[in-house]
Image 1 (cartoon, one colour):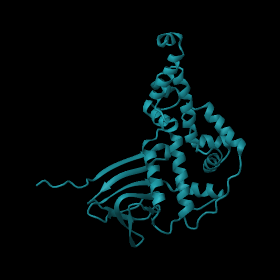
Image 2 (image 1 turned 90 degrees about the vertical axis):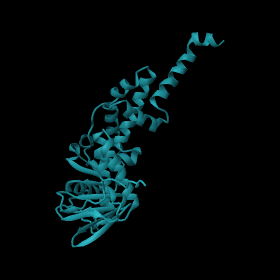
Image 3 (image 1 turned 45 degrees about the horizontal axis):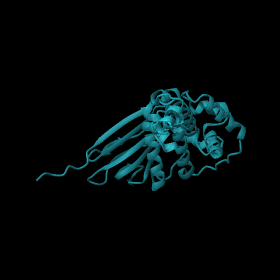
Amino acid sequence: MSRRSGPKESVKFWRDPVLHDLEMLHATYITYAFAPHAHEGFGIAIVESGAMAFEYRGATYIVPAGSVGVTHPGEMHTGQAVLETGWTYRTLLPASDWLQQAAEELTECPSAIPYFASPVIHDTGLNQQLIALHRTLETSPSPLERESRLLWSMAQLVRTYASPRPLVKSVGKEHRVVQLVRDYLMNHYTANISLNQLANLANLSPLRLLRTFRKQVGLPPHAYLNHVRVHQAKRLLAAGWSIADAALETGFTDQSHLHRHFKKMLGVTPGQYTRGCKNVQDLASPSRYADVM
């Protein structure tokens, strides 16, 4: 009789220089156990399946699937499986600056490094948000999107679970500033734009820009930039450009990058759109009209 093979351990680690060398991990551990260790910044563990246990501050905590574990900079902790099948999780190891920046920009006043009284957060919504963030940080070629999503998610974490919770300053109706940023994205859509560039242009903190722009436009700047790029690519495809050339001309990294955003936004692929444009052109030509008479 053949034995069914169980889950296998796997590890993927990478770091992002754009995000101040943010370190990330996507792993499945079964028998492996972490020795006591500490991180220079925060440790954020997002458990996808199974459950992880860790010793921290003199106690043992369990982080089940759908939950999030948080350790503070410089504080020793372990990590091991609770079940025989192990656990699968994603980790973010942001420098304390990221969370402090989020706290300061939420309140718009100097702030200490955020403090989390509980190292385990039982919040499936937060878990799913951070999983989506992690996937974006793993796959998105856009520095603006990666910066924006990381800061936004850290702000939600601080706002909801830091103790004491920061008093968030409301966002005003800064229409002129938002229009300035929109115009800049329209005119520089092929450039590799950073969040700090836009914040400096608007003379706002990065998080305030994100909040203000999102409130008025309905999209964060990186998503609006993709919106601009797709519509510029649409014009080029209608004019007869190849999909690959249209992708590169409008700031996408390659044809598949354009394909993903084009289909998501317009409901058709670039190829379907191109074929549709050609059919309309063919029907409008006198020779085609003569053939079908």
